[in-house]
Length: 267
Image 1: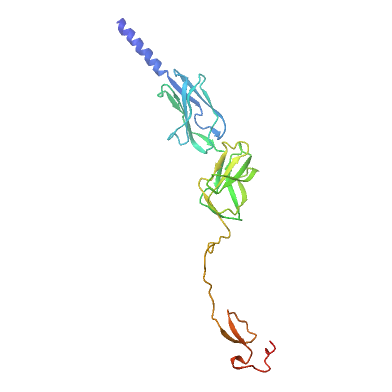
Image 2: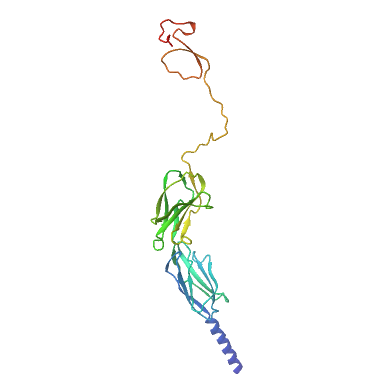
């Protein structure tokens, strides 16, 4: 009987110990509004864990996960997420996992929202803009974290960038006089003047700049045969205009002879 009681006690203790190994996320746990490129604390309560944690975030309601921290050691249940991405999503979740025993984990109860800092709207790919015209570069911006922006363009798919303007107040649009640099590999980049490392975006795909005057042919090296009209035309002088290559000119008497008193006999 004593042996049975002892065995039952051990099993109960093991059961209590296993049951008490928990992680409960307290923030973000659903409904929060966080700004992209800002810092916010991820917090949780835990019991019976190793105090080493793997932390993840999802932008698609848990379909995919991205690691934020690996084997992060803490006893206070808090991690400062200082690299919130520059995205717009209302389907964000956070997951905290015990690094030693991954079956001990928790996920935000419901989704929270991240508001991105800057996004290019146009040109965002596929446009064809004519050099010399004024076109609007349109973009969205989070006025809480962005005040002034820098604008650049590339004609080689982002290999190099040329400044359009170093700093201009963010208002969602900029009138750009398109330069005469024909290319079908153009992109626009916009960045925050204060924090360009995170708060920036570029055209999703390339657009085209076309010259307002583009000579296709002849463009050098061609050899073309001139077109000529009738040669050796016989013409009696008159006041009527003529367009020809060569001809024989006579006074009013024509080919037969000189006409005395002609209005052209002094020529």
